[in-house]
Figure 1 (tube, one colour):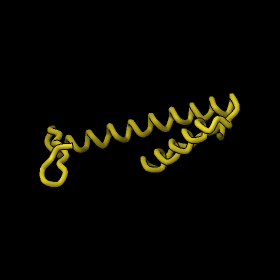
Figure 2 (cartoon, one colour):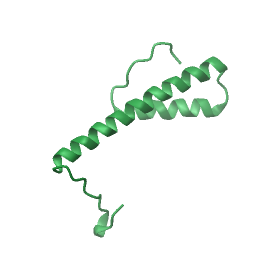
Figure 3 (cartoon, one colour):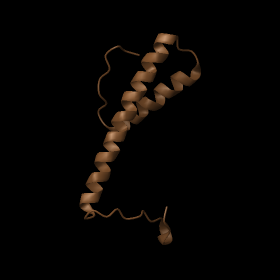
Figure 4 (cartoon, one colour):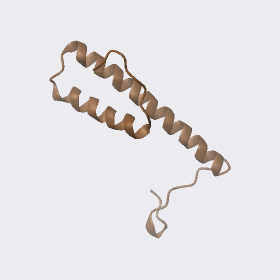
Length: 79
């Protein structure tokens, strides 16, 4: 893990990196300092993803006139 972490380009790259960090931590092969750095980076990535999702939800609300509509599967079933 690098000491200077750059912000992710987008949601997809943040999620991919977060999955990679989680896999590294789950492997049990990281030392204490590496684990702490991985945890910190994971927290940064998670925060980034949450903010992107919140922003996207807000945009959807605006587009739907403030009312979130349920996502419908085929044949009109709610998810």
